[in-house]
Length: 81
Length: 147
Image 1 (cartoon, chains in turn cyan, red):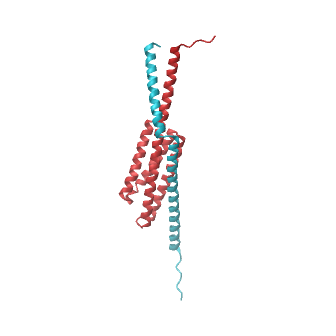
Image 2 (image 1 turned 135 degrees about the horizontal axis):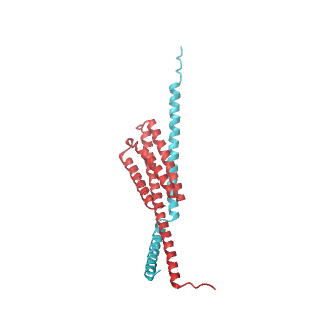
Image 3 (image 1 turned 90 degrees about the horizontal axis):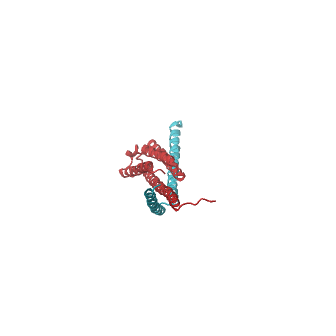
């Protein structure tokens, strides 16, 4: 390898190292693994609440519809003499 | 007898190592940022969905939504909640393809909900649309920056 290529390679390497250090600092400040885990935990909790609420509403609705169906099928009591 | 390593060879070797290490760090930082953006979008979508679910229940309780429509809405919320949890699980694993698949599934579920938004006030529809756009933007950035 000629000296000019070697110089270029060294310069590229040092520039990349500087970029990596800057990105690492920025990434480290803005988005740590713990931060992402905390966001995901909050999102999961809200999603779990959505699921539980939807399930409760559907169960209640089913119970109401079953009651209405039962009422509709209920034989009319004969009136007393 | 051990061969001597010239100083130039040591510098070149060091440069190669520095380049490779730098690229690994840069990729890791980009991945972390992409994961964080996806996690934030997931939380926003969950909060928007929850808000709209509460509004729909209020409308149903007030007698403004038919029981059959109410059932459709709640089935949609159920599917969206599960899609958000599946997306979060994929983000935790950090697999790019998996995250993209789960984002698309969540988008499909929200799209299904949007079909029914005529029943809801305009502000609720806008909140859902904003979440949808946020998630679409994440999907685009994920395809540019691999997680």
